[in-house]
Image (cartoon, rainbow, N blue to C red):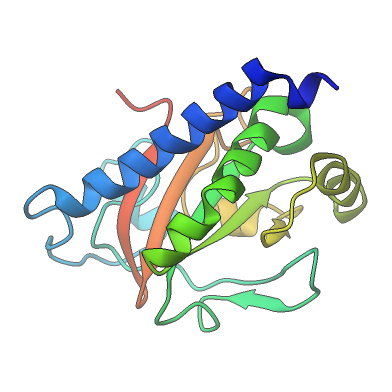
Length: 189
């Protein structure tokens, strides 16, 4: 099918390598992960002059969250990921085919992420029913969260940069031990 053509496979591989490259670069750049911590939450970020949707600054406290992995039914909470680097990928979800191709690409480099001690969790605003259908269609096997109430996306200050004012763009937050180690959204310069 179209999804397995050589061009699509190369495209996905290049996308995955690019994301992995950004992650690796963030660990290599001197001082990037050694910033002083600040209180978390979108309200604090905006009070400090951060633009809505700009995410949280590196070193800030990661907001508490309690969601459920759509695939396994297991809880995915700020406590359950404590002590393991977790790459949260906030996306526009089913209205964005490229978002699911990104999840596939990230999943394809999953072994490399695991070697670096990083767990991938994708988050969309889709309802569980709609998300289950897309996850099945795209063969997603990594944890996926239906943030249909938008609480988790709002707490990480990722809303407002997608195709619509109330959706995330393509935001990545690497968290560990309750801190934001790295943040990047495609819309940022």
